[in-house]
Image (spheres, rainbow, N blue to C red):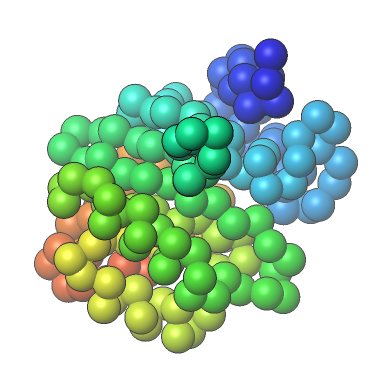
Length: 184
């Protein structure tokens, strides 16, 4: 069994309260035992979507002729939304720069025009990254930063937030809109 399959089997056993515990360990930087820091966030986000009613595809690679062309952190299907997921768990001193957005845009260009992307970053995004995300059209890439991730996890509203973020992007071109502001 591959490491990915092991993580997938382990995460599917966690309920909502256990996900909160995993989130707290990720944030504290404490030992995650069998989880690697970045992988734990990927599986946590996907499991949160799954618990909240979405269909998910756990991390996988796309291979051609023995060469890995892509590594996808996950896919979420909820209502009318098909969403590629990318997760970044960097040191809080280092917000995510533009490179994951460029990678996501490239991945979206190879897929149906109805697919969108979501990038989850514990440390947030640099100002230029958040600004440039507005100009990724026709690809839609939504940005989720640490406090919003925490809020939707604690309140078990990640699917509702995905829909709200998507609508806000369509209506006002705000890929970094924090749905936590709607729910307070």
